[in-house]
Length: 186
Image 1: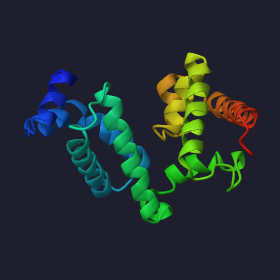
Image 2 (image 1 turned 90 degrees about the vertical axis):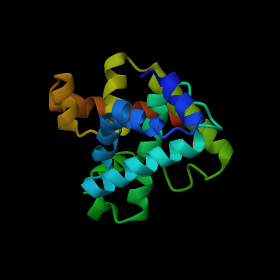
Image 3 (image 1 turned 90 degrees about the horizontal axis):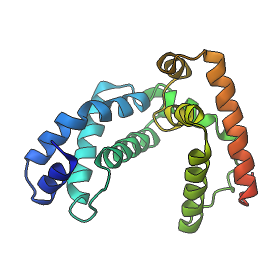
């Protein structure tokens, strides 16, 4: 079913919206969540929470790109679940490991928790990713958005594991330079 029709089902409050969303995007969302959370029950709960949040939000905000919209909700739900629980125990440390790769990028005070800084930071990240060559962009997104392991990225992209590691290191360095240029204290 086309996304526009699924969105229309959400707006009409039809139960078919959830069935069609599950049919079309269930596997995609599970992949995102499974890369962050390991426990199957947590993954299922997170997917159900994603559908509930979409159900509650779609009448007010009509997404242009449903797959990305749902993916972002699922990813945030999984990250919130890790934050609310013991990351090492429930997430098996995978998401924490990926996030720790950025630990040398910023001090605690670098990114104050206000709306303006969040918007600026979001724009800087978006601009940075958009500026990357296709292969670098794919590696960066697979690692830091989908939380794929270095081995998974190497296998999927048919690259050497060391090439992926070096590329990620180089990209983090470039991102750090970009953030410093934009005035973020690192």
